[in-house]
Image 1 (tube, rainbow, N blue to C red):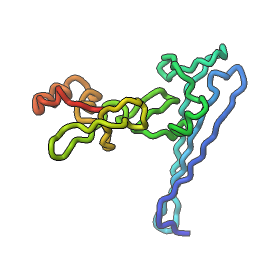
Image 2 (cartoon, rainbow, N blue to C red):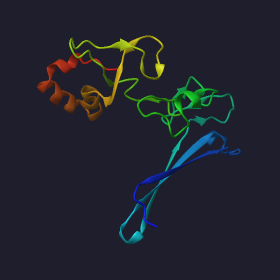
Image 3 (tube, rainbow, N blue to C red):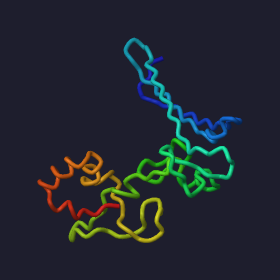
Image 4 (cartoon, rainbow, N blue to C red):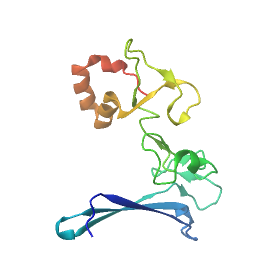
Length: 173
């Protein structure tokens, strides 16, 4: 059979692991298998698995920790969290990922909407209503130039500021 389109199948598995591995539970594993056609009806199968988890310590007091060891001050598996932000491994990359305790450009460091006539930044509901107070509205196209330069390192920031000195006052989400 010849496939004319790419298709993907996503499997979500939630594992409960008994002690002494309780620190790994709950763990969500997202597997994506992509299928595409090749000449002579050969099928190329690519599979990818990604594990995302907030680890729970062994003392069962409900503490969760990020991958860098920092204690999270909330329960990423609390009721309503998956409905608002998505399941572990399939959250919106521009928004809040409660399982990793990270945010994307919609929350912090993203490009903002400007009024086409005045250039003024639009203030309104913030992305995912993560902060209930009005703030800069996310443009939806990723990190700002200065945010990307900061991520690249101090030499890139200096290089960008030489060409665009006004970026020192850049406003982002």
